[in-house]
Image: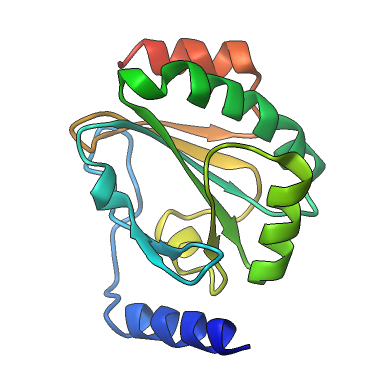
Amino acid sequence: MKRVIAMLFASLLMLAGCKDQEPVRVGAKAPDISVMTSDGDKVDLASFSGKVVFVNFWWSGCGPCLAEMPEIDQVYKALDERGFTVFSVNFGQDPEAIRNTARRLNVSYPLLSDQLKISAARYGVSAAPTSFLIDRDGILKEVIYGPLTKAQLTEKVESIL
């Protein structure tokens, strides 16, 4: 319970510092976002500077989200050493739902929490799965609506690695 309160408090602090932002645009700098691990630690997108980042918004009641996660994990494992990472953001669910999904799917990348949907709002996400591919310079290269297969994601990532 203390972790949940700490996560909510940290999220409210982040919200207090939010300003109106322009919508995300392909070709522009991707906005930084801060989310929480299931243990209550803060993670910033900016900490992955210099890597190709696949930001994937999901929730545990979304069948296509859950179906694509093992495929994303295969790409992550294959391309991690070349500078690819996954920033997997659950929006709107409590940490226990995220931990249950992590246990069930056993993916190797961390599943992160945006319980108050602040990051989802910053990126204009209203449905899941919605993903964003960001290059090593932090430039948004593509917005992807709907699930991806391993082959589709590999092709997209390889084109900017």
